[in-house]
Image (tube, rainbow, N blue to C red; front, side, top):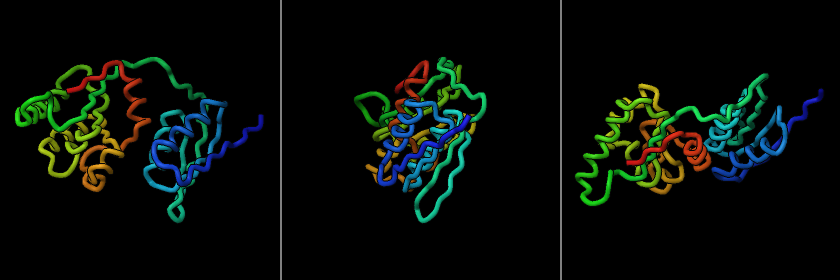
Length: 195
C-alpha cells in the first residue's frame, strides 16, 4: 500500500484556523501522513498538540520563522469517542458571582482552592476573557493555580484573551490555548463547572 502525504500551507493564517483546517483535512480522508506549514510559534504548538492528541507522531522543523510540522499516524492508534468522566472548570472572570467584587475575589480563591479536593479531580481549568488575568503575573491566586498544575490539572489560558489584555508575556502558569481546543475540551468533558 502506498501512503501519500497530505500537505497544508497555512502560512499567514492566525489561530484557530491552522488547527481547524488540519482537522478538516484529517476528517475528510484517511490521513496517514501530513505536513503542515505555518509561520508563527503559537500555530505550530497548537497544530502539534492537535496532531499528537489525534494519534500522530509529530516532528517540527523551524527555519526563518516558518514551521514545518510533520505527522505520521501511529500504528494501531484509534481514538475513542467515549467520554471518560472528565471534569472541566471554565473560568471567565476574575471574580465569582455578580455583586460585590471584593467578595467575588474571595469566592474565586475559595473555588480554585477547592478544586483540588473534589473527586474526580478536574482534568483542566480553562481561563477566558478577564479570567486569564488570574493566570498572569501579580495574580492573587497564582500559587493556587501552580498547586493545581503540580497535582496534574492542566491550566489553559485563551490566547486571544491574553493578546487583548496585552498579557501574553505575563502568563505565569499553564499554557496558551485557542478557541478550537477550548470548545473541544468542553465537548469532551463529562461535566463543565463554572464559578
